[in-house]
Image 1 (cartoon, chains in turn yellow, blue):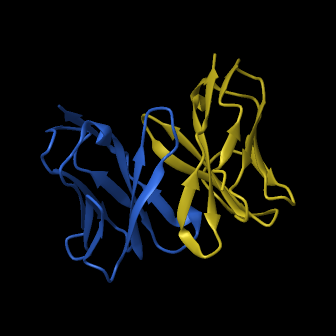
Image 2 (tube, each protein chain N blue to C red):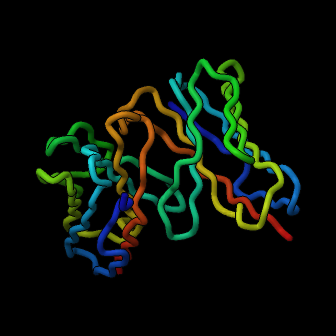
Length: 113
Length: 113
């Protein structure tokens, strides 16, 4: 089975712009979670989607949003980018039979200038 | 507030020795604990999961212990190799919800030949 894929792998944006990141989970996985990873804060939970519905949301401002499509692919959007949004954005999918284990994608490295 | 600490930011070990990484937590009652490996610029890769009622888990050269009284997990890599060099993250979960999983900041392990 192919692993979790994320596109693009690298992005450079300027402050005030918006960005959309994409995640395709492992085939058969319906749960997708998004995380932000920075050197100072580590891995922080953004939100989780299951069957096109947002199940949980972390403590991030409303500029961060996401959605999930019927094929389980997910997108994450960040509007009005700030310098502090520079980070590695990871998505993870989970198998229906072993919900605790997450399979991470390679991440999208976002740099905001 | 919930806190999870990994013993040190970096650990240097000679090839062939056993590497031991520590994960401590406070104000949390995890149902399980996981260890992930992360290489630079990549997403974390799941290694092992141990539940609250288990004392020890093994997988090839890896061993994890979980002491809910001490609120501590130890992660051992025996017969360490330079290819084991990576950052290792511990993660605690209360249930299967991704929002209830918290990650440590990681320990960067370097194995020197």
